[in-house]
Image (cartoon, rainbow over all chains, first blue to last red; front, side, top):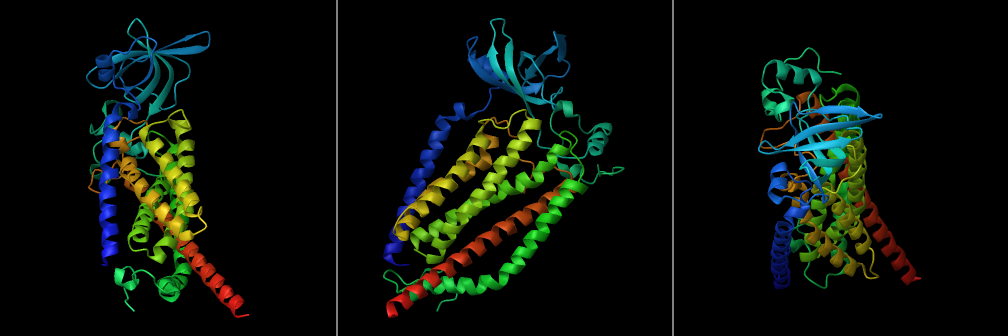
Length: 168
Length: 258
């Protein structure tokens, strides 16, 4: 390697370390803004002022969903939990198709003075597990997994599961 | 002549003659042209097989139903978009340190193809997001970092062609590509470092994947097809670019003689 190329290589290495650490530091500093939503525990710790808009994310707590229809518009009450804390949410409007108990959701809105979260919009956050319906049923029947209580075990334990038909 | 085209000794240091500088692209051309029909054929067969398998024969998802089939396009496009940028960064590295002419051509030709795959990833993701999440677009870390990747590609495409002296363009664009490479780990780890609406990783090389085998096979075949399509397009563009340069040089030489 010629001295000129060696010098360019050292210069490149120095720049790479500089750019890399600058990015790492910025990302660490901006971590709270890069997060798309706050979990109920973080919300309770930060205690945002009523009316201040933010995104609340978590799991729809099992057994808390109640829908009432007033004047043709459904209003749904449910609790969003992260397993440690939970916050009651009120939403008027049509929920996404994937909304169910145990489903991850991100609600956009603000706290009201009565310590409930009033959502203007509810987005569904689906899991990262892909399997046919009958495999899911077989896992549930075998007591290995219930979609209401978290993600399934690793695929290696159910990829060999015998199902009647795996085509739709 | 050294057989290893990437070895620094294969490119004479500084003040290289025109002949020496273009010897390696010439060798690339001789290797690439007979491979191209094969590459194109395999890309087409694998992509079509993967997509037909995924869209007609693979089972619907338990949670998302038929909408999950978008993954047979979205996931391969995302993987190729990132691998393409990694290739762009490697080409830029050789272009910057060794001033390798073939690396310059590779960097110039990877950009538009990579941008195309990133665009497919963004559009298919939006079409997937609307029915499942309830929104075409959200500003979470994963989506935003992929949008940044798209803009890096566009910036690179513009910068590498922005100078009258192509050497200056290659240098500036190589620096942009290498600085932008910090975005790649951000895309990959965004779903682990921060809360995102985008779901976490399904496929894990170290085990613990969360996809049923009859859905995994079409996904992998489709991905292989997308990777080969990317390679085919880049090799074809590089060959065309080299032939264009050779033609221009021949025409220039002919014009000077007359």
